[in-house]
Image (tube, rainbow, N blue to C red; front, side, top):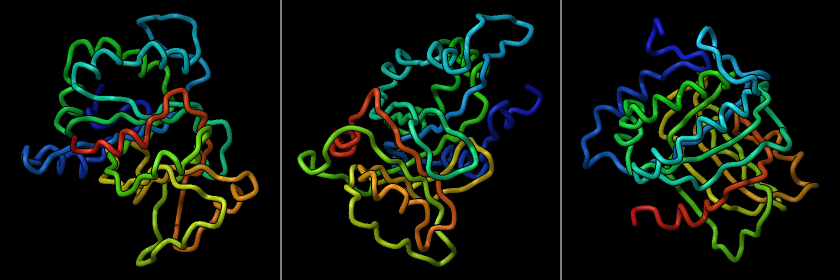
Length: 234
């Protein structure tokens, strides 16, 4: 790749990367990396050739579960987007990986076993946003229910505080965004996962104090957000 900061599916945010790389071990800590994913209709392996599969299928092959386990990372959320309320990009899948530190996230990128898998991500991914998050709130498991979750990724209006949620929104887990590491140039302030009544969902399309947002419904294949956040620092 000619420019190491440019990927086929996104651009590295040098401000976030530089800040994270200069953290001391005492300053660093756990980070929940949120991935928003949109796939190519057909995976493109270029001149190297590859299987005739969809981009989503290529990402399934990529899934570096063994590498993550070796790093002590876990996956508290992974699922398909079943409905989208806002944003111009038609997101298809959402995933969160909890890393022991930002340093461990960077260390993964240089591992040979990770690089061997990464070719499948490059072949399958059309665009992605990857951001580091830290938890700021979590529900009691008895209060949060089960089933699909609504994810909101939000950028606040300058100087504004977002309005409170309407009735019908039950909190699951909320995060502050510590920085976008790879994306499309947009910046974000918080990420919210909630369970939302069907009648309430359209009301989330606009929120006073929020300048821009991604709102999608996710059907989780893996979901342990509450357990993951509740054990932060353990």
